[in-house]
Image 1 (cartoon, one colour):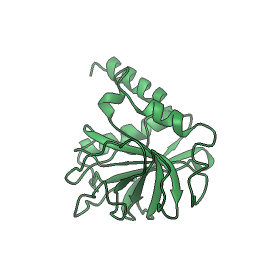
Image 2 (cartoon, rainbow, N blue to C red):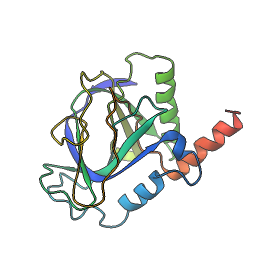
Image 3 (spheres, one colour):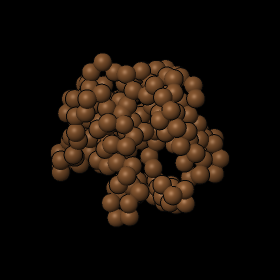
Length: 209
């Protein structure tokens, strides 16, 4: 793992509140539906001010560490979020020094391996320590998926309702999106897709955990 300067960005998309534990329990996970919605044709075609057509996953508003709840937003990078489409939220990703991992190889096995590397780094007290503020899953260039998580602790927790606060989310018209303000929240890298969660469940059960 290396540390890079992550650029600031603004992402607009759909959000859910979940946890890794929920994603491992059949019937409780929310990421399957989130990614199915984000992956549907033209899912973000009506979002104004798109920077490109890439889809990003932002994990923020962490309750504690990778064992706690977090909010995941899947969407597109935009120049501004003055007018949010119905049911979508905006999240500002701060430009900070961040840990960077690359998942190379067949998916989702390579992605699972990268997640496990980051969890091992966290639980072993690796240096630099994870800040647990905001993580970003970048689109995969040439078959590689980037995982970037904040490495330097933020001095203040972001306000999830303030779109101008780094790492914050703002709701647009439509049903409210559940978010929780966490003291110095924590992230985990990129989205856990259904097949990835299923493989993780099987591996943990086989290991007797």
